[in-house]
Image (cartoon, rainbow, N blue to C red; front, side, top):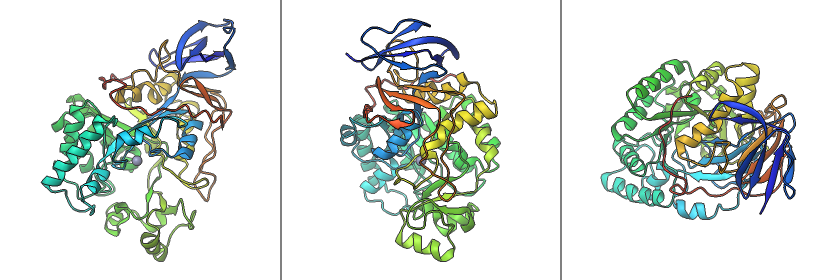
Length: 461
Ligand SMILES: [Zn+2]
């Protein structure tokens, strides 16, 4: 039996939005007891000193692209993320059961959505600009329900990467997700820079199929001057009873592969993206702002290279994070060391530094709620996101005065720089990172949906 006693810290409870100075006893991967301040450690327990620190449930990232990539999983761990949801934006492994089987030893817990783009490809729809035919939709439904049976956490739609996807095919997948009581996430289409039709489409999908819809990385989609209108649309939909949620990151600049449909000349034109907005985040041209010749060369020869798009508005990031139902997300992807977007290492510490410490927009309790219990409820992770006896012992111990992100964009800093102030991250009862260094614990498990309960109604804070 493994026992860990966390002493001297302040426990932040996202359920009651309260705090107390207390000790916390972890036994065999679960929270066994919360003991009064000053309690002695049980004799055989290892002791973790949390003096001057807050102790909270581990963060849950509702939108990542780790998908089994160990290095990226480690960077998430160092941010305090103990559970990630992968397979987003339409991209996922096709055989979710097989994928989950291979993930029983990982830095953090992983749940995995099944993605529409993967399903389209599997049934032979290779052109992102065409709609699937009805027999192909039927095949996609079969593959999708197999994935859901095997434990997919939900379905992800990626019409921004497959502009030809029809409402019919997306509706079919939403209905399947609904029948399994699992959520749908959507990377909304990009018709144009300030377009809200894409959001209306996502809300309509949720409304007609009655599924739980999560609008992905909201600031990247609508943080361009239309954020208030977009949030109002979400709020009005919720008042009509539509089960719509959103996740959003802490950066105004998003990132994707240069070869994707997002960087077709016509899409760039319609979205007001110009070459000077781009900066390469991976590959031999990392840090460079491409000119016309380099852009064409990269699309041809290096379509997988990631590029950061600098078109968003900083203030919109915070406006969206203020919304009572926003879940913080990273949109992290698998990069090589030294490459990528700072969201891979900085998002969650940046959220606390900006929203709590610097701007005073949220209390610590509220911010912890948004990063733990809220996503746990949206995805149905019943034993996560709560500081209670018998809940999973996924925990963070951090110094609130010292917590800050250090990651920055290639060319400006290190995208993989670990945050400061994170004293320990505990995954499944084991200390998986200490003072910014992974311990090599690999205590993360595959979270097959069905094993963690149905989704619940989510009340506002
Ligand atoms: Zn994404």
